[in-house]
Amino acid sequence: MTARIVIKRYLWLLVLFGIAIYFFIFHNKSGTINPASKSFSITDTSSINKIILSNDSVTITLNRTDKGWLLNNSFTTRADAIKALMNVLTLIDIGSPLPKVVSDSLSALTSSKGLRVEVIMAGIT
Image 1 (cartoon, rainbow, N blue to C red):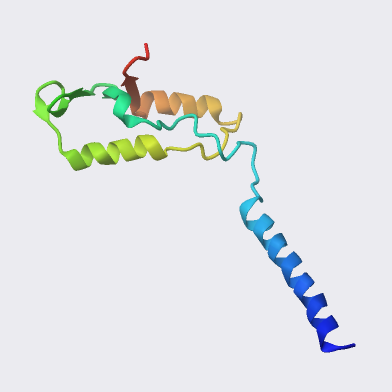
Image 2 (image 1 turned 180 degrees about the vertical axis):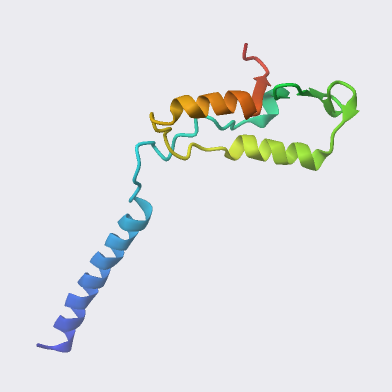
């Protein structure tokens, strides 16, 4: 065999190996949830008017005004804290489905010790 034939064979092998690696890295998604699903994230945070954070005994309300965000309609907020909260609302994603075995106990735990977050947007009732 000549060197040219050997190079052609190995070149095709390298191309096929590269394609296999690409599909393995970028298209090998396991799980039952579509990775493109971001049903909990908010893409446009500029339409948020009010955010309510509540626990059993404490409720905090953040209202958007012309001057910025107000905490419980009386205190001003730090811009970096609001920006961090908006980043969380934008980047939140589904990790995995909840197993049926723990759904009842986890629901009871989140209702008793969890933090409830309500986001009220402009134009959505």
